[in-house]
Image (cartoon, rainbow over all chains, first blue to last red; front, side):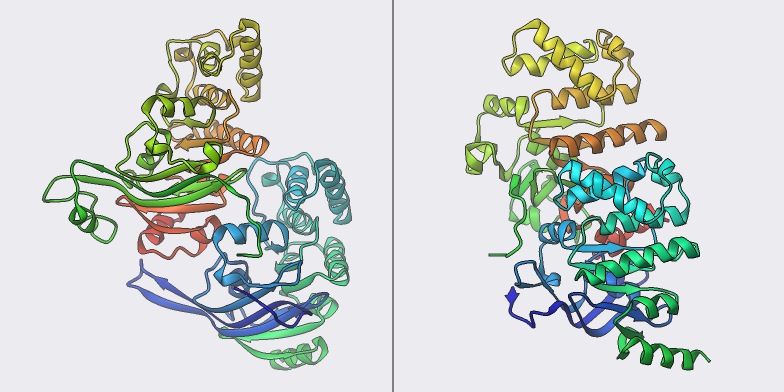
Length: 255
Length: 284
């Protein structure tokens, strides 16, 4: 189950397929991914582009295994340099990796209700192996970096605005930088100044060597952060290149 | 050997099966999710649970979901020793290093396990508590069973536990029958934790409570699981409970495990037709 691959890669996705079989709708099938292959290296920020329904979110969920891939391989390099295929791991193994080496931040906050903002972020740090005082310190730093008003720190996150929740989500997902960070529209509800702080945070992580695979709905964010852009269409990679080339091409299509 | 080091199991259930009535291989073949029944039409035997296997580590909660009658409570009762088991094995890390199948132990030895190894929280507090006895008295029972004799020490520990589960201490000497449903569950939790068992089994712990009361009990359970690093099995038909407490799940239907998955995967990408039906019913 382990493999020696290109040591600069953190993520090496090979011919990934995801098909949903809807037993409640006469066993109809829906294809989300049709054989996607891509790589992400340490310190690289790969942005996924494409129209809605192209498979961007499905790809992130299939890597994180919120979706179980139908076939293909998702090689991930562990801290000790060995590669494991995430598709073949047991649920318990995957749960362990999620807690420590793989982060996933979506546009929605996924946290137990009635839990305070600060607690959510600090707990995430503890889950990643920090002791309680380090985690509390790191949580305070992360929330400050994202300009989350201190008056909201002890408030239950469920009563906060969408933009505030997104910042909590980002703080929790990045408190102890994972090796691989999957981002799905993490700043979609943020106003310009808070958005800037969030993008700054993500950019810093990339420079610290985190491998980032991200979906942003705005081209500006991609231009600013991405080291490479991959365009998806109907569940396959249709184009791949530098942000300048790719985004110009996309803009041309849009025009 | 996997290069990923996962926490060691503290509870391991392997091939567990419970049949009410005589059974043969044929009974097994004629029942289950595929057959749409747990009853053997020839003999009338009920295959309540069959071939159930899972492991739970410290600090981890495993969900068991399914409709009523799917066999989830049977599994729990077999592990707890409330019910005899037909086949299979249950191992606890703390007992003989996990080498002994506790299902082969004598009834009295198994009852001992309930004092400080496996705690159970039932949906109906009347099952876990003596309603005619005070809250303090209910908690004193497992403490004295564990060998605590000093009255003051027992009182002290009971009040500690009750304040941890947010039961007002001025109610400590009231009989549990006078308590509300939510408060009874809190006393049950205090009793369950009395001797700091490594394993807790929760059977629909918030079912039947008002939404606001259930939310409070659920928050408490989540806090306790984290604080004590318990290995928990959470039996529930309520996906919001499962989502909040567990990281992994098994889905049961007609006595069989039809799917096991990470909890978020079960909710977003259920595979088995029965799981899909269950999730879409809960989420619509």
